[in-house]
Every structure is written in structure tokens, then in C-alpha cells.
Image 1 (spheres, one colour):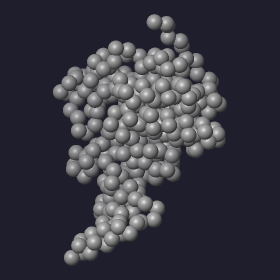
Image 2: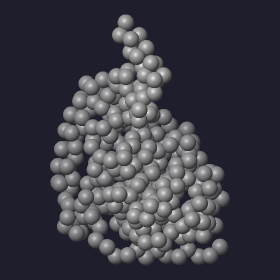
Image 3: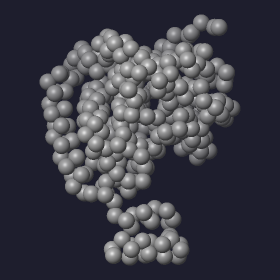
Image 4: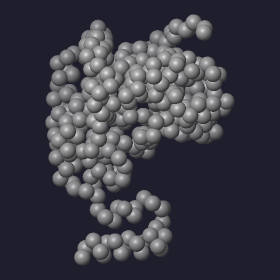
Length: 347
């Protein structure tokens, strides 16, 4: 097996302050959403605890017109790209303020306003879709690219193979981000892949793969910018492996104590927590202090409190929204069904 080539990222000025604050916000929102799930006020949440640098550092490399196809833990990228807090939270509540009218499972937000589709609960089937989006952008010829995320477990799925073949053969302008947190739900890397270094899998498909410390915000951002620029300039796809660790549960539906020693996660987090590392870099550059982070989180807490009250007070979507967004122009039979349902519900 050939030796790993060391990746030397282009030297660039990273928006350290903005990214570090975004990481802190993602963590605070995850904490609040997990608490709401435990209180029975939402049904499900998947947190990015300890993986915030991978999420924010990679997605920050995108331009506004680029598209992002997430997996479970990248929803915070929507907020970084300007999506409002209330509809973001409302999706998990399925309230009338949810733009999807409560039709989607909790924790699966999406919006064309920030060019993000919802992630799929079926492992890896978002990868061919992401590569397809990128290929359509290549045909369009406007210089846009698509960043598609996956976990380490997704690299063992057939969808991964199809997508990698498609991306390599057609040189789709995409960045395929494997956020390797070493756990595919309850299966450790050694149980689901003979090759534990996911970046190497790109060799079989004829394009570049590289591994980066996923808890180093500056390294993630620099490598992501390089991969994005390569895709945009016609250089083809990159498989970017962001090596990190899933500190907590896979989701609020999971108990990791059943299949692993939780002490390992605590030790990793104590040593590699990306947030203090990012803040230390900010302090070296003189762009952000702990006091400013605390102030920003205090403001966020107030916004979260207000947003949750607004969302819960709004109630569930109205019956008639069941029939909206199905067709551009509602056909007669659907209109008839709508009238029948509404007349029944009012009796």
C-alpha cells in the first residue's frame, strides 16, 4: 500500500471568529434540542457534540450558490449559511411554522433558500443524489459545486460505490466529505471496513482522497477550501476524510453504553474538544475572547427561549396544508378530497 501523501493546504486567512462562534452556537442548540427531546416536546435529535469543527469548517468553504447535501450531523451548516432560527427549530416540532408543514421526520430540515436538501435516514443514499446535483451543475456551466456528507459507515454501502464511480468517471464538481467519527451507529470502524482510513478508498475511483484532523477548525477549513476550489475550477471531485470521534450517542434514540465503554469518549473529548482549540486560535489572533463567546451564547439562550415559545404557541399545521405543495396546480380529484376532509373535520 503506498504511503500517505501529506496534504499541504493553501495558506489562507480563515474567518476564525465567525466559525468559532458558529461552533459554539451549534453546540448550545444541540444541548437545548436534546433536552427538549428528553422532555417529550420533540421526537428525535442527532447532536454534533465534539464534531462541530468538521461541520462548520467544511461548510464555511462553500459559496452562497453552492449546494450542500448533509448526513445526520451537519444541520448547523444551515444556520451558518443564514437560515433563520425559528423555521430551523420548528421543523423538529412539526409545527405550523415549519415550512415543510410537519411532513418530515424531526431533525431533517431543508430549504432552497440556503441550497440544502434534507438528509436521509437510509445510510448513504444521499451520496448519489449529491453527485447527481454536482453533475447537473457541471452541465449548467455556472461554476457551482455540491458538498455531500457521509459518515464512515456509509463508505461500506453500495450507494457509496455507485456515487464514487459516477463522480470519478464524470469528474463531477463535488466534495465528498466523510465525517469519520469512528462509529457507524453501534459498529466500530474495525467491524464495518477492512480499510480504516477512508480517504484511501478514493484511489479505486481515480480521484484524490485526503485525511484531515476533523477537530482542527483551521485545518478543516483550509483543506475544504482547496477541495472546493479544485472542484469549481474543473479539477474534479475530492474525498475529504475528517477524522473525529462521536463523543455522545448516535442520536437521542441510542444508548452507547450498550456497545462501548463511554469512558473512551470522555477521554477523547477532554483531549480533543474542538471548541477550546478554536477559541485558543482566536485568542492567538486577537479576534475573539471567552467573554465574547459567553455574551453571544447568552443572547442565543434568549433567542432560543423566545423561539421555542413562539413555535409551541403556533400549534400544529392546519388540515388544508396536507394538500398544498403536491402539485403546482391542484387537480380536480385532489381538490375534491380536500373539500371532503375539511367538511368532515369541521363537523
